[in-house]
Length: 165
Image (cartoon, rainbow, N blue to C red; front, side):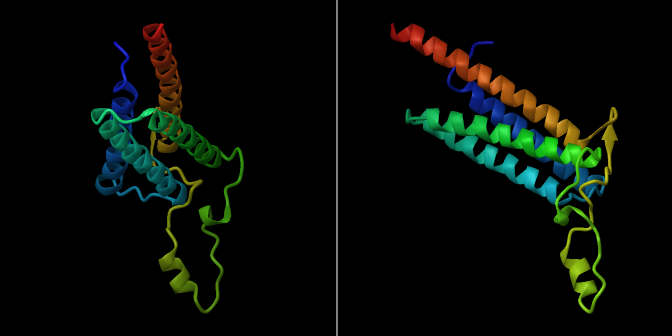
């Protein structure tokens, strides 16, 4: 595979859009409700997609796209971190923050609080494939894309230095 200035951007567009489509597919066709951390992971994937599309346009317009490549790598690192954190909560390695729990405070506003809070808990695994939850798969994919992105940036910069001399 030849690595050029489009490689990182196209991989990020493809992987982030695929992960988002799969998340919405599972939500709407298998009625898997996203927890708070799932929604945050989707947000990071949306940002990756948007930054990757902006980077693609900058490449097409021959503008400086290196800033966006670094941003994409940092976003994949944050996606990896968030999904590993979520996976750790699911496996009970550590406890999540309060918005991930469904501890109900019974008072006069109980019904309003129940209706305003997402009913899915972050430590409740709704679906597993090959003994990995969706957060685990997101973690593996995000870490892999992060590592591949760093490698692509390294190869691209090395090739640029070769052409400059």
